[in-house]
Image (cartoon, rainbow, N blue to C red; front, side, top):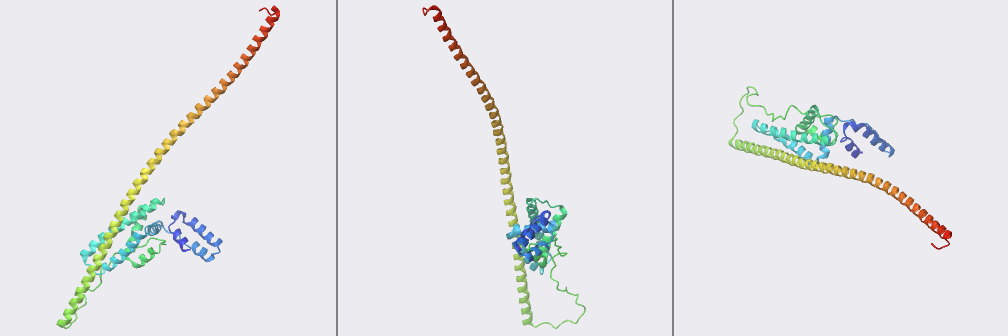
Length: 296
């Protein structure tokens, strides 16, 4: 049943209901009443949700990397400064745009073109997957029914800014050992934050590189497909020419056979006429010999 549902949610929405009824009927026939009820209760996804499901199922490796990128970005965004946030936001937009284009291509290959509003819903879903762990879990299930809505944006850490805690008495100055310990802790936090930023950047760069490679591979495949189509068209043209030659040859053969039959008929008639003429000549010669007493 799980496999049936996975298949169902990658079926184009226009064919969803007929396919759902077919799968439910097959489950009932097999005696799986509970499975049939669950399949029948499946809701048809929107076009954007279907495209997101199709992307997940068709590109499992890229989808896994995308989910890992989201996790790394969420970790990095907690502590990044404004410059780091701007850098990762730009990478995030590029990855989302590239992946949504790939999903749109998969949809076209399945016979379904995505309109501009649907494409926007798809991109919003992918942004939600990067920003929200709950959205990421929903998409990872591969059975989205509607597009996901991202939060307003990734939010950096929410530690209160200096001067916002009100006018309180200053705490006593820490001892030197405490200050050294605090500096070590701060340095460790900075190292950990920088490591998270580096990992997020590496994940984003790897995802972009993979998408570039996939686009290049898609371009090569499209070129091969175009060449195959051209060869097929040329073969059809040659076959049509050969068929035309065969048609003409059949006509000529028919005409030749008709002419042969007419010639054979004339040959038989001529042979019959020759036989009759020979017989008449012999009879005339015999009659002449009788009349002349055999002296001629």
